Image (cartoon, rainbow, N blue to C red):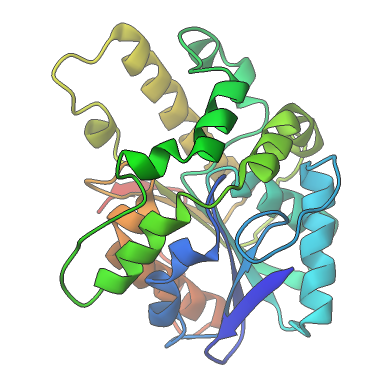
Length: 288
């Protein structure tokens, strides 16, 4: 298992990426947060530099693997769990299993337990069969059509090239394992929480940006409404919760709005430390 820790101070922020991505996707955010406290990004089994682990790849197993990794890496300080997309299920599982280690939680446009059972997500095209995607990856189709190359300029040019190349690393087995266990992960986390007064920060994508197409369908609107309600319901997980809609961001909030995450998470850490007062708008939803 691969883990990369930078910075110093307590609590330690643990970064976990969305399905198909790894610690590279935090490479812009981690250095900024490391100015405030210790930050550790890690790769779940089968992604990035971490070896694969046998099935099942469900929330219970992934949370236990993270706990063992943190013990071996001697990350013993109170931790703040920060997960994007599907990683939100794993963070909730961890917080339920090891509550004494968790000082706060940050959920970035996360999946919710058993969301696939919502009628808004139960219809429409589900994309090509899995074997088609796997064959395309093995054959190098993404590379041939330019998905794995980038020619950016500026101070983060190398980072964008690395992210583009990362798309063409064959994570298919790890991805399919987690997708196969997605329902099981939902069953394991549907009853997680509430977490009392655990500090909880929810950062969600901008619905207007997600629907910014020429002709969004009724199904598009229905799915967006369902997702928005799921994000809003996350506030019920704690009596000290706040939700921020990242203006102009799609689902990939860490890429679209790293500035917002860097600012709000740094403030969140200071609030946990007791250096800054907790926001008086507890339980509110704001757009920034």
